[in-house]
Amino acid sequence: MAVTIDDIAKRVGVSPTTVSRVINNSSYVKTETREKVLEVIKEMNYVPSAIARNLSKRENNTIGIIVPDITNSYFGEVIKGISKIASEKDLNIILFNTNNDVNSELKALREIKKHRLKGVIMTPSYSNNKLEKDFIETIESLDMPIVLVSADLNYIKLNGVFVDDFKGGYDAASLLIKEGHRKIGIIKGITESSTSENRLKGYKKALLENNIEICEDYIKNGEFSLEKAYEITMNFLDMENPPTALIVCSNKMTLGVIKGLFERNKGIPKDISLIAFNKIDLIDIVGIKLTYIEDSPIELGKEAIKLLIEKFETKEDKIKRISIPPKLVLNGSEKKY
Image (cartoon, rainbow, N blue to C red; front, side, top):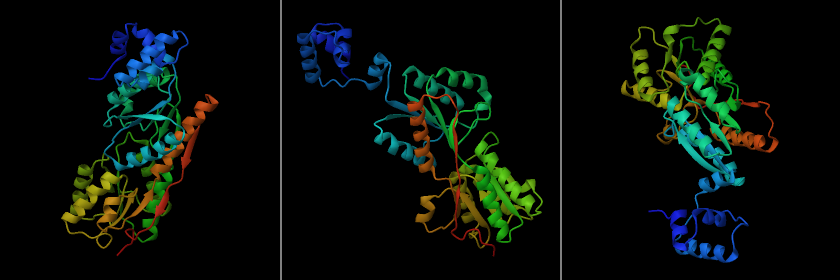
């Protein structure tokens, strides 16, 4: 069991308040008492809680990071970018995983407020509209800088660092059209996701500019799920007039598509062309070369924490939003046979 301030106080024969003052280097403690407390702290291997100290001192050097799915390698890359800058700036990190649940997100925000953290970087879940009022009230009560990363909110404008998802969808569709494709499918995320919807808008604009009729049967909601994308792929392959190319809007959904194609012995791009969003190292390892739209998640993380630090230093209320252009990485899977 961890040693507490009460344990130290009992051993020395002083109050917990006195022990706390010694830990926080307060001048209101006699030298003799201070030495006794420090000696017992050393004997009992007591490690002060950083959060407890911050609560007493009303300051903090810890930031909260909130992500919807820690199992998704994309968010691991975002966190990697944040961590690099945080380490350089001597900032600590507490990570919250919400499993894409808005109630868990609200709970995380309230914990961050309770412990008076220095600021927040978060990728909001895709279902905040269900608790819009509660979410806005919680955000406004934080009294600390907050920066969104990768995904935006529709009903409150906050600082943020985003990828130009419209351009990503537009560039992907335009490349496939240039390769000679006319029947282009897209597996997007859920409707509540601004990221997904902006990619869809870019896709539609590219088709319309090239006089290609938008076929709703080729537009499917994969819910950012491997299983759902697999199911959609099987349905596409069973169509009488299936798409000759697919744009897949997340790495997990791309894995579902590949699973479906492999089960049907369909080659990429021999049988169907494919453009993914974000690199998937696992696919590279097994020798599948996919053309993809690079969101640069590590760069997103770095820019997000730089913006948060800027807000610490300037303390200005003006909202700042940064857009990073996506990069098209060609590996041949867009070709038409």
